Length: 345
Image (tube, rainbow, N blue to C red; front, side):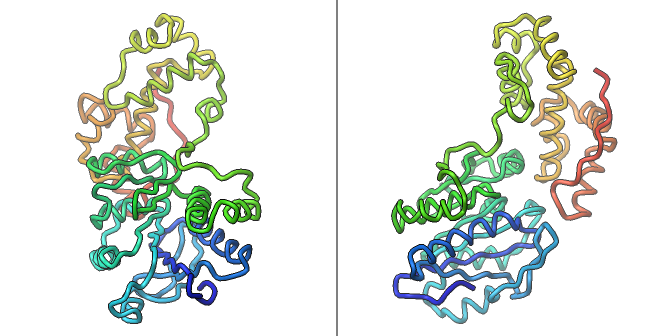
């Protein structure tokens, strides 16, 4: 638990869900601790919660002790608002998390005027609880496709974090530092946020609209602007893949020139690269949504489930149904990826 409360102290709860992301959790708590130290007074108090008051194991296998159970906190606070803000901290497996008691507790807190937030994949939990209607949210880039397919009515972004009225969601990892610095600046001023940033050895306070992922050039180690543009077009057109002639025309090349460029820079044809890109998206959706296989295949640009299954097995060595069964058995959305099998180019 954080430090003793003062009259102007803001109390923040962190609800730990099994398999939560340790880096997101600690990245959210530490700026609060440092803000108290830099201000030399207790601006923030934090309470760590679990449904039953028992320790919760993170995705890295470390169990974290908590201060109290949800029901006990409600009894202690009576009819008063128990917290100023609460963050649902989750990670692996959240797509299949169902707990009506937790959902109901969060909805009661929201009705009491508690700000509702989420770290990493926690937007999934808030959406299941019915707490994101009419609000924008952020989620980890790896979980974004599955979230968008499962909750098409909820605006989800690939930004670092989203602050939409009394909803505070971030994409996880060190983005939790940025969101907390943003909230500290709003409440306590930019000067204190800057001091906290320096203590964290963060060279700048990133804006909510900074990108989550490395730029495509850095991720792939390629610098040819036409190649980068072609891949960006592929990533933006998964459900309805662009014909190679159209792709080439968009970047100002002939189809043959585009073929040569891909083979020289990446060692694959454009068609081969595009297929693997679509199958990677499919793997995310298999593990992170309950979409039927046939709908999932269509969402990734395949005209039939049988063709999709054949391509998937060639790349990953197992069928889409086997992939989903394994994920459910393990209780995590993203298994360690096997060494890929080569798909005939």
